[in-house]
Image 1: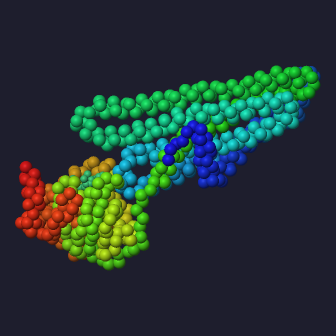
Image 2 (image 1 turned 120 degrees about the vertical axis):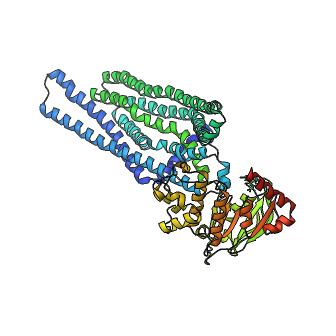
Image 3 (image 1 turned 90 degrees about the vertical axis):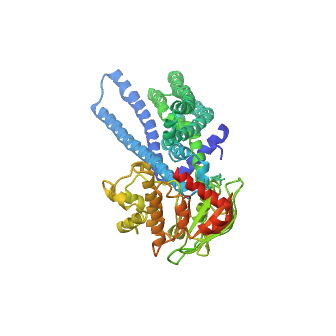
Length: 590
Ligand SMILES: Nc1ncnc2c1ncn2[C@@H]1O[C@H](COP(=O)(O)OP(=O)(O)OP(=O)(O)O)[C@@H](O)[C@H]1O
């Protein structure tokens, strides 16, 4: 979705506002009633000021007397107007503030929910920094005009009422208003057209700055160890400078527009005073009328600015809204069936003639067929890039095959409900992810059925119980952001324990124990195979000892299964397999 040209941005911005009003009609109504009352009170106040000058102050100059009763009446009227104004400002700000923050919260949650439901392929195409920007600054930008919106609508009500009262007072003075008010609108429109491309550019640059910053922080270790700090700072500076320039361009235009918006009502006041003096002379109006109208023009400038605030923010709002909609409207979700897997104990996994490609790229798996029989351990072995991780992703349905089927206990994965899939299968990925939480929190992940006994049992299976017992607060130890206080092998075992705690019936280990030493790895696999109610296991393996523990080996070359059999059989019959496993072994001993 594009952000559109400046020409149509006003229309689209108004549609975004319409959407906001339909989403929060009650709050919008409260805010608008408050600000309309505020506007009407401005007019009332002007007419009271005029009346006091014309009927109390001017006669007092002539008679040198003011009645105390009249003064008390005037004081009471002004106090009453002030009280009502306080209430109107309160209603306006309350309605607008609640409306803006509720919309922001609603869309932040919606964007985050959408991120979580979009498939890995989508995430791979979008930088994390951009996603952060979508959920934060784009959502904020979309709803920036909401804060002044009720004020602007109330101002329009005020301008219409002002025009009516001006015509009721004097048609000549009314003509000044009839010329001024449309000019204010016109100026706002010109401003919006000019501002549009600047705001869109600034919003895009913000997302880029966020993406580059995120990448720099994420890769801080590489940047430091490779001595690239200066280059990385320069790379960042290019985008920061671009953002500075686009924000200055926005500010420059605003700097030009704001004084113009202030000046127009002042010109109106001047015109009223000149024409009013003439009308006074001819007896067409009274002093009270002239003072009322002149006073009205001087106090108009502030509320009229509210229209400018809304219009000025529309381009930014449209840019933010488009970016938010691009996430909310993104396609490629996996749809789930309703099927369940009622059995218990280890499940069977079957790949049948599976072909897969990433996006429009070449096929990376061709006609892959193999089975992990219930309760057995199957090792996937193949050179780097041969498709092992892709098979692991397909086995737990992170992605769907282009053709062929993947089935668990005879049920095709797309026919399964998400809960059935998540309750049956577990993937332990190559790179462990640890949340900034306690050991317990990381393993239980708020799953209510996972109590401390299950957490401990999972830790024991993952050979992690001893190191966790050695942590200062045991299960309650906080592990830091991404588990920084743990070693790589400890992180891997924690992630494995997390998967095991859910008692999966099919466990997929994608090189999940590469950072633990070979003896511990063998102990883990031995323990997993030994449990009676355990899972069937598909393991991407590199170490000879691990591979030898598997009941069967599936050997891949360039996305094709070229042989299956026991480790011993493949060592005897397959040269490529023997060379690869021997190479792994040599690398390990070096
Ligand atoms: N997200 C992706 N987009 C495009 N191509 C990809 C993507 N992920 C993997 N590939 C390609 O798919 C092929 C198989 O990759 P895969 O990660 O499954 O191999 P692997 O056997 O697990 O490799 P390794 O042992 O290095 O982890 C490779 O050619 C790789 O370049």
